[in-house]
Length: 227
Image 1 (cartoon, rainbow, N blue to C red):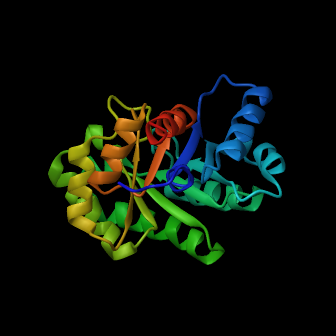
Image 2 (image 1 turned 90 degrees about the horizontal axis):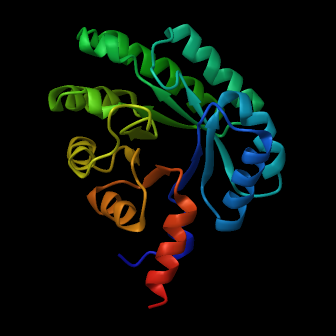
Image 3 (image 1 turned 60 degrees about the vertical axis):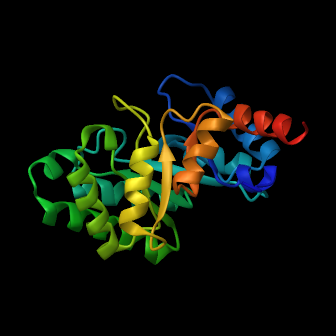
């Protein structure tokens, strides 16, 4: 594929979204991100301020999860969350769509939610990522979300939270890529555990990977390049 280790690292959102971690865990997570040169640390909102201080003076960004992981807070709540995490130092925002409203075929709600959150991000120069949670969706629902995204133009559409019944699949990444082409970037997330998973997702069309196994992936890639 011709990627350098540094290029691959910059495609990784280094993820730590568990509810039972300590500040020591977060500190180590940020230090690993600095050491390996990942694009972001993907964290829950309450940890943004803490991680921002550790990452100060580096090019590693804080990536905050909004409406996470179920997507069942109101639009107003998600908009407030988005503004709040940006104020606290997040430079990228991943939000979960309201899957119930999608299942209700309330597409105007989905579009309104996406427009309002993406607008907040755009006004602040922040990268926006829309999480589909593909494991719960039909292919038609995934295509409909892509269609809405093509109207609203978030920076990325994203497969999964990693908290659902399944994560990213090659077929889902390919479907999303076929729908949006080069107009919107794709983030694959959930179940990406090794270098083969990572390279397969990139080959399918993903330009960003959400994974808690970034260190392992880069170490495996280093070993492969050195053979």
